[in-house]
Image (cartoon, rainbow, N blue to C red; front, side, top):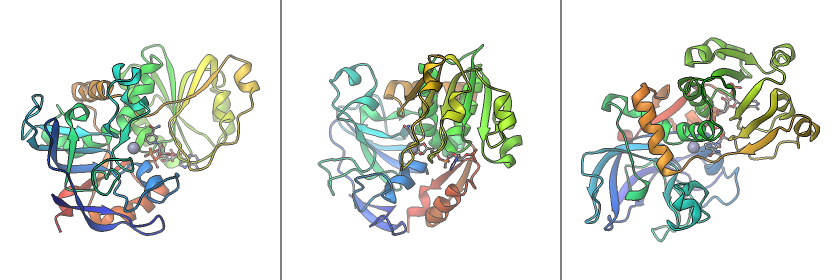
Amino acid sequence: MLVNAYGAHAGDQPLQPLQITRRAPGAHDVQIDIAFCGICHSDLHQVRAEWQGTQFPCVPGHEIVGRVAAVGVHVHGFRPGDLVGIGCIVDSCKHCADCEDGLENYCDGMIGTYNFPTPDAPGWTLGGYSQQIVVHERYVLRIRHPEEQLAAVAPLLCAGITTYSPLRHWNVGPGKKVGVVGIGGLGHMGIKLAHALGAHVVAFTTSDAKREAALQLGADEVVVSRNAEEMAAHAKSFDLILNTVAAPHNLDAFLVLLKRDGTMTLVGAPATPHDSPNVFNLIMKRRTLSGSMIGGIAETQEMLDFCAEHGIVADIELVRADQINDSYERMLKGDVKYRFVIDNATLAG
Ligand code: NAP
Ligand code: ZN
């Protein structure tokens, strides 16, 4: 089946309209008409070949929401018309310890929604900047938000789960002090989720202009990280710092804000490495520096249900497909509140 999509033929070329094929749904597959797809900074890293191994043509997009169009004969959990989502994972080995623990995101055989090997043409997966996608039912999420919120639900499928998973893993809740570094797509969800989980939330931003907005998002305090005095006021006080920054920066400036046994977890994935932190900042207070990648399917469903229950969605700016390249430039300048979402109806031609 031929569908319209938006993608790039090389890392130094803009995205443009193209056509791709989707497989006919197999017995366990769900075929989805994509209504909206969020624009994640990872899409930009991948399509511009900032990360290694990008296959072209590359069609990004892993914050997918839409309606079920058809299901295979053995699919019993979904029916045509259901509101569903697809995040960053479309397949995994299904039997390793990680898959059995519901942490398919850490399976060595995880297949990402774009740029991962697949028997389908052209040999690598193609993502959600497209009209339709066909995915094994195991990786399909149910959306329980009201339909009018659907576009703003899309970013939960990556930005939401990538921040929810570490917040839950490190037991964030009442009595915990949590820092969120970088108020972009991931960071703004991190603030909303940490607040909803009951933590005391401090937002760190490089942009003085985001101060007021961070409070509106649910932060209890805001620190402009370039201001040494403001930073020093929080020394040795955090249980967890969730660092979403998409560029290399000074990690020590944040490590010294952790209290004894505190953890900073990196979810931002810059194209070039950070300078190594000063080990004394880890040794002195038994601090931990860690990382976290998206989340498993079960916890993604848990996050979606938590958000539906608490009325949480992303703050978005809806764009047409022909605005994707411009949206990338604006994302790089931090000129987005706080996630661009593509209206996939504009791929119709
Ligand atoms: P984004 O919307 O561009 O937000 C990143 C934020 O980081 C910016 O808004 C900015 O916030 C801050 N920032 C940017 N450049 C900076 C610099 N040079 N120094 C300090 N702060 C800077 O990006 P995103 O979509 O949230 O993604 C963030 C990163 O997470 C990307 O690298 C992405 O690939 C990665 N990611 C990882 C996972 C995972 O599973 N681990 C999943 C999704 C995305 P302020 O203006 O507030 O400073
Ligand atoms: Zn993403």
